[in-house]
Image 1 (cartoon, helix red, strand yellow):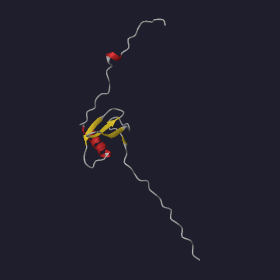
Image 2 (cartoon, one colour; image 1 turned 90 degrees about the horizontal axis):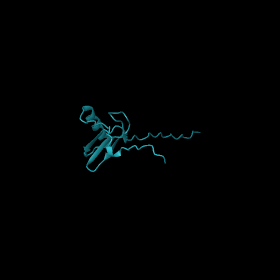
Image 3 (tube, one colour; image 1 turned 45 degrees about the vertical axis):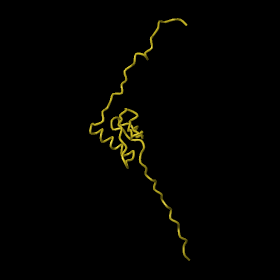
Image 4 (cartoon, rainbow, N blue to C red; image 1 turned 30 degrees about the vertical axis):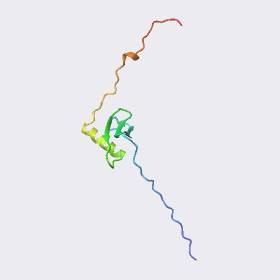
Length: 101
């Protein structure tokens, strides 16, 4: 008599997806996001504030805008502004004398 056929186990490979959060070329933090604006795309780092706005291009995905952003940064075409804010005078608290309550 013959044996029964054994069923093959189908091994599914997980489908690879494109990333949504990228690594910053300046500070190395994994906080760079690509956001769609009204007339293009904004690539911005949430840690150091490095940013660049691109015009929308036909057929480009967010990863393409990120790659163009990194290329521009490595060429030195994206200026890095300092994030140090100067204290404003209207927000400073005036210290009064020691008055009993």
